Each structure stands twice: as C-alpha cells, then as structure tokens.
Amino acid sequence: MTTTTNYPNNALALIAAAPMQQSGSSSNSKGGSGLWFEAMARAWGQTLDAQAGRIQQQSDIVSGGDDTPGAITELSAQSLKMSFLSNTSHTAISSIGQALDTMARKQ
Image 1 (tube, helix red, strand yellow):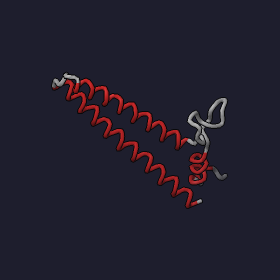
Image 2 (cartoon, helix red, strand yellow):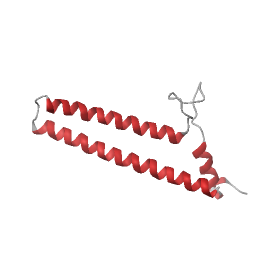
Image 3 (cartoon, rainbow, N blue to C red):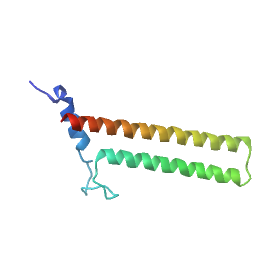
Image 4 (cartoon, helix red, strand yellow):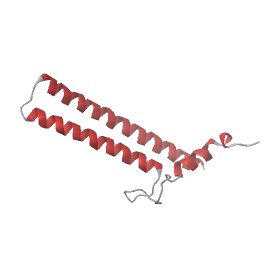
C-alpha cells in the first residue's frame, strides 16, 4: 500500500500551495491570494509593527524626562526583543521560502 508518507515532496507541495481555509470568503482580508505562506509573513509583520509601537512608547517615556535606569533598561529590553523578533522572522520566512523553492524544482 502506498501512502503520502512515501512521497513527502508531493504532500508538502500540496500543503505549501494550499489556500487558507476561511469562512465566507475565498481571499484574505488584505486582498491577497490567501496562501498560508503569505498569512505567516503578514503575521510576522503585524508582530514586528506591534513591537515597534512598544519601543516608540518607551522611547517617548524616556525622552519625556523619565530617564531613570529602569526606564532606559526597559527601552533596551524592548529594542533587543525587536532584534530577536526581526532575526527570527527573517530566518523563518527565508528558510520556508527556500524549502518551497526546492520543492518546486523537484516536482
């Protein structure tokens, strides 16, 4: 008996190209094609935007006169978190993109 586990590239290719399951609409709310890879990239973008907002808030606090060691340390921690998230998102998107590219060439 043959299963899809014997042909992982075919199963992965189907997953990679599969549209996201949504109720009511065939495309996502941003007007894109609705592929999960695009949804992942948008989610990373939203996460990075939110973190940038936290950094801006903390920066406003520090520049507004609260330049205590605690406030500065919080700003540094938020900036380091942004760096971590940015590096992680880049790695995730690049790695998955390369894997999808490799799968497409092997099909």
